[in-house]
Image 1: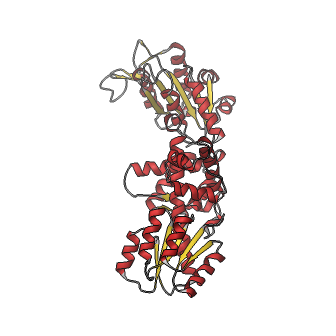
Image 2: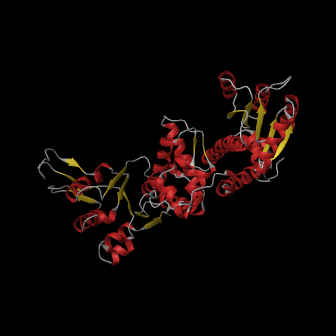
Image 3: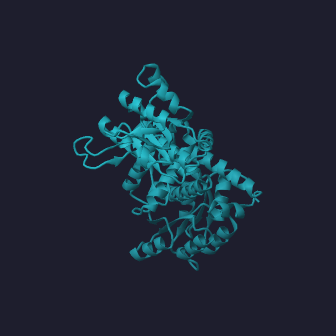
Length: 451
């Protein structure tokens, strides 16, 4: 359904010219020759934007602007005038106008101002809907998403957390394996005890052994005091061994013995130190192939692979990308700095279509970079990293041609929200955390019924 535009102009020629421009651009147009007529339309009809002349007899444009914002603060308003002044421009912007055009203006200028105003409003509403859905679709330990593959992953986490066996997490780099490991720990019987993570690929073999098992005084140069290893300090909790496939054959053998005996010797130590930990390991390699090629010990693999969890890459759960984007935007907002009120449908579409070789980690970095580069309060496609822009086709300038992902997301979410509240728009809007007017606008756009 097209956006509905109200044009308020007392000059018949300008009124018809503006109407023709917007109608050619596929807007549904309602015309009003006076401020009083405009007020009646706004209070009676659902409109998406207004083009309002500043100087009109009896009821001027600023008063119409006030009425429009009183009825629905999210209606986009473009003020036009043949008598531009700094004072009136400032007053209009303070009143909530999205733009201010001085007559005479071209058809291109009018359409650009209207499209930009609608785009900003749409971006705010989309972001509001996403954050509302984000709050309603929370998962353990901050896992975000609603796709089938994400739901299956959450179920795997629930099952793994219910027992105390070792867990092997497989997935590409940046897919969120540590988040999954923390979720297993946080929802299991060891949640009150430590969760200790160590990256086996980031520490040299000699130091990794000391980190895991500890050392006695004088075990090596610089070992002036004895130190407990992570297996001791995590006693009762969980040890997360990230990138386990990078562990050397010697350390694999040492770790296997520790797993079998539930005890280990510190470097240069003589006695076995018992420990009680749950092992969760992860790797971005195919550990089954590593075993077949004898690069990873088969006996250690079977010790760790009691429960196996596969984390899907982001490209296989694209429907989660808008929610993850909203999640990272909220993180940026919570940390302070630049205030971002929304994200454009074009940007959401580009993010959803990109393949994300770096997975969730790359998406998080892309959102943080876009926030840093954003020229205004709305994230636009141009703010995204060049890798994303080059990785998918650039959007056309017309925002109305790029709503596939956003509209599908909105439709699914609104249908479920309305079903929960028997079609009652007011109660659904309250549950979603948005105003009734934007919800009605979305329902009309998507041709959804409401009571």
